[in-house]
Amino acid sequence: MMSPALETTLIVSIIVAAAAVVVYVGMRVFHAQRDLGTDADRATFQTLHTVSLAAPHLANGLEEEGASRASRHLRELLGCRGLAVTNTTAVLAADGALPDVDVLALASQTITAGRTQVVHGRDWDAVCSPVVVQERTMGTVIAFAAKADSGLVRAGSEVAAWVAAHVGLAELDESRARLAEAEVKALRAQISPHFIYNSLGAIASFINTDPERARELVVEFADFTRYTFRRHGEFTTLAEELQAIDRYLLLEKARFGDRIRVSLEIAPEVLGTVIPFLSLQPLVENAVRHGLEGRPHGGLITITAADDGQHAVITIEDDGVGMDPEHLRDLLGVRPDGEHVGLRNVDVRLRQLYGPEHGLVVDTAPGAGTLITVRLPKFRTPRLEP
Image (cartoon, rainbow, N blue to C red; front, side, top):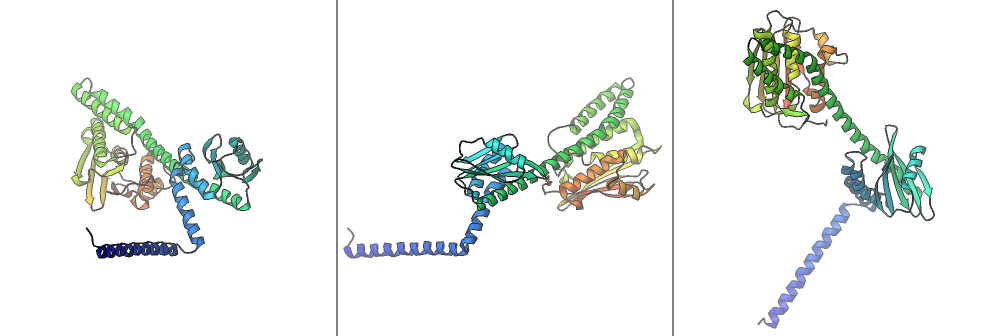
């Protein structure tokens, strides 16, 4: 049984501790409010926070799922009772209380007008703002309120412009992805007519004289073409690309025989480096077609891959005919010729993915062969980002 004096002491201690907690929490709240500054500062912070919540949902552009998730935050941003987001043909999202009205008809009127307009209903107003990306109206943001004042009209226009900016970024990312895919297709097209025709001719030449060799070449040809025409992923490992290069050279050697000699020096620690798909094979093909093919006695292709700390340094060298440096500048600049499109495509892709400092470095001169150096980050994710 606790004594009255001890009980009183315990109660007083609890009260003092509780008071201390209240004071501590109160001070934390006071300092938090003070840190946010004035009412205007707090309003700015809240606006930025709401915008940051909406932004990720528009990363894929103006599409239904993202618009639906973003609409709640956009309505909170505008402080309206209802909000709708449309594209040019459909209502993508609606949040809050919307009046009984044809939203798509409001959107159509706004798209036709090409500017923000206010539509008055019986007990509601609608601020309809177009989402314009590079002079193309992609959709609308429509805010519903009991009465639309000038503040809501301005805010509606600004929110629509903000949405347009994010839709534009999404379109830019998509166009970059399409460009990368088009460049890969161009490289595949370069491989297709020239290489496939010659490989099949080389295989056919062995059918009667060495059937076993012909069967082996057919398998190598199938594996190589399966790799070059695969449809999954824009990236591969250095090991896989080198394996494809090995198959390519086996097929070319079936045609040229001992006229093509190959030397490899590969550091095992860089084999797992992620590189753009078909970024090295076209360089080897360039060495065969433009460096050695025209020489009666062929020549040597040397491929090295070395570990240089944060980078893998890959070189492809031939002792062939070389080229004029001025002509090389044209190839890698704005006037590529049809024969060397693969060289320029690889250079452009590397610069887009890793930055301008990671383009091809080419040392060449007439009669002096060609050395191409590629320096790729071992651990940095390429940007598709671009």
